[in-house]
Image 1 (cartoon, rainbow, N blue to C red):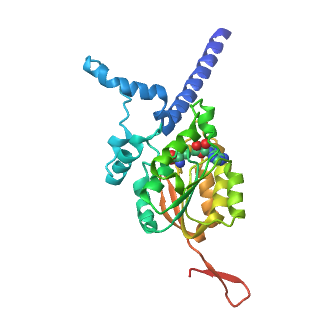
Image 2 (cartoon, rainbow, N blue to C red):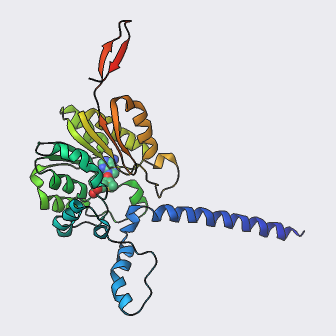
Image 3 (tube, rainbow, N blue to C red):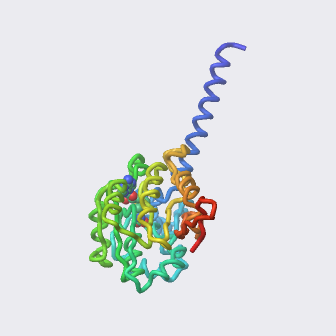
Length: 292
Ligand SMILES: C[S@@+](CC[C@H](N)C(=O)[O-])C[C@H]1O[C@@H](n2cnc3c(N)ncnc32)[C@H](O)[C@@H]1O
């Protein structure tokens, strides 16, 4: 065989490998919720009714609006009363809120203390404020956007202004905003002796940051309190490396505190409730733990 033949075969194999890798990255990107609110994608959706009336064939990647996906009356009312009046670029944010009902109901009528790590434009903060009119929400965010969507070139400008405007629609007087990196902010909350009934971990999606957020906010969680890890099952558009995903960090963390918490759900989100175990001597000088 001439040498050229082997060069062409080698080159062909390399190109096929590259195409495969690129396809995998596009699939990961398209599966992210942030991609669905990409301005180009939104524009395509908005222009669709006009194109259809001219007899054009609808594009196959049509995404139903968040409101159209809601079969939950509470969520539909929230979208009408708050989202429709606010300035939100991500409509999907609180799609999991129906799962939260089981423990939000227990916080009704109480001055519940909620800690949110990662607020973005305030959609989830608005939901907590709207759903629990007596609750106070502490929101921690750099308002610089998560590294995965900054790396992707997403528009993360004006987050803090949008947050202020949106929470103002519900009740800004029940919000404490901390515009800082969570690693610093959570240590300060610990110093202040704060405790929370609910912690919503939705900040950085990088595994080591999630681990730091989990460890610090666990100490801020009151006994019986609930911790939600949003985006538990989420494939980073940055790649397959475990350091880019929240899941390995959540799994490692729950492996450590597992005896002190009850799992409420482990699906798209991981939700656990803290249970306090009383330490007792077992008579041999060793400590045994029993639930109270
Ligand atoms: C997924 S968004 C939060 C979405 C919001 N909870 C909602 O449902 O509307 C993640 C947010 O975390 C913030 N963030 C990322 N890393 C952070 C860090 N280390 N400390 C504080 N905030 C961070 C980003 O600025 C971004 O606004």
